[in-house]
Image (cartoon, rainbow, N blue to C red):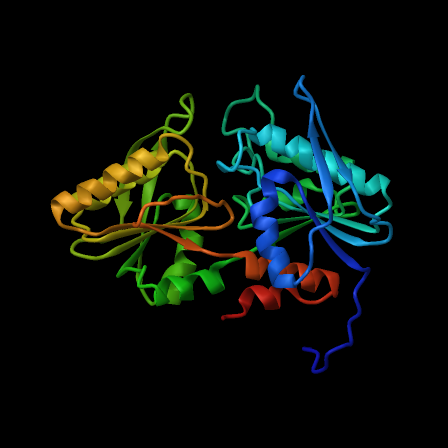
Length: 342
């Protein structure tokens, strides 16, 4: 039976925000929406490569949210440097007696290493990172559109919860308003098909998928994509959660053009864009101009890029993340925030 009343909700503890340096740009955007300052911290890196983080404010008894951005070109730190600094920050908060500690990392590290994929002599990094965050003292981890929902089960729920923010209900209307859609929504592989189906239903578009064949002995390598569906003489919206080196995008677009697709827009939640992604995407744009069709790329601010080309469009997610954090603090409904349409 659905409840027909709303309970008065009080904050579970005074809310506070702080950030590691690599996450500052995103954290400042969220803090602006919450109309709150970021706590002063000192991030220190020693000559030998070790680091530590000092919190320069009293956080005892607070509901503390710690931001870190794992990938991007904002500095020269590696994903491992940034993750370890997040662990330092979480432990510092635990030792400073924060009542609740939430790590906010839009791109969850190791999310694509969630299983062994047939090879037995390798670790499962998604689980390793979960255990490390848990051991450092994180009560909750907030991330965005995680690669595999089952990663939530890698945390011990009696210690740490994973809060996975879904963007679709707000991302799709924005794509439609910006004219960044298509007659058919295409998933780059069968694993993302159910997500692509949501896009297609929201846009009243057709649905197709590519069967992607990889050589797992060579990272980021796709050697064949087979289309399931019809894109002939149709505009295509190709959707994915992560674009890394854009090798999959190149292979997908080659298959789509061979099958008669017209204009193509590529949209992703996490525009990682490791080398040589930008070069590959620019080459696709140059090809589209030469051949007389349109090519556009859309990413979210889960990963921020600077000095982007005119064919790249950015969907800002800081407002949604700020609303989620506010609901967590007030013990409210996160699902209601995610389903809200601006």
